[in-house]
Image 1: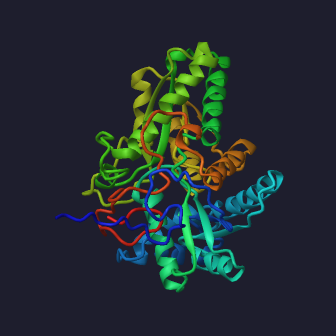
Image 2 (image 1 turned 90 degrees about the vertical axis):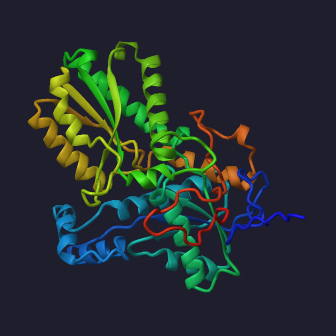
Image 3 (image 1 turned 60 degrees about the vertical axis):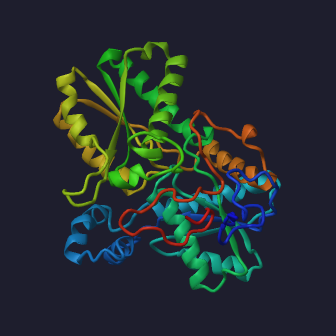
Length: 394
């Protein structure tokens, strides 16, 4: 007689512990955990920060210094911590305006304030059922599972695993609050080019996101869904970009003829390791041969104007466009726009209310967007599976 293995969702709230894809049971959370990437806030922080980011890979400081010049160009200060301070304050204001009495705790994976400190602060205040908002919208190891592994590590290392639970808000790549800034930015960029006398057929829209190893991309998202060659990570970006362009054409018919494609940026692996392509600067260099006169780069994979936007797009991509003789615009990220902040609180309310999936806001028809990650999703090829919160153990 066969037995059914019990579902194990470690470190989860009671409503999520049995592993439902969508949690339809209202949950009385005690606090919100704003989980960020972190960044240096001075020249002396840069190398220690990069050591944290690359921990376990044995990368010498000499190689880290090759990346450090991006930060040193801006005085060693990443804008990301300031952006998260602003987001925390905006969330607190929006929660208060809706009468939701929940504190917001902020912690980072790679720099102060660390996640360990934030979770300990919450526990000391008696707030032990936490709902995490990770500052990355898509499904992949680095944008989802790594945060969940960090939650598990923190709860284990602090000894709070038997008292504190951490659930995670679903991937929000196609939530209207996130997408609105990109749609508006594309529309305004096209309008600006047309006003300068550029024909629609001569305009190129490049939706840019962080490249990741191809093997990791192929393992992104739930394993029982056929996402295509680039896994859920590529499929989600493609779907959102297509929605944005469809919407722009609906409200701006003069945009008919504008071309678009998905590109990647910020790869950091060895040349021998395949990463998602094409690179944004490589594509920009090809545009004159395609007859393009203007390019708008849309930071579709990014929530705010942090270093990958300021350096890779505002510096390197802009220089590539200048060398190619192209008009160039980089469109805005959501940042702390009222629409985006309201969207985050909508996502929080989904879980507070146990809102059914058919009552949740989403703009694409892709499957997924799970509250509790499915077993085996978003595996890190290099390191394999580690314990992770807010998902069914593989």
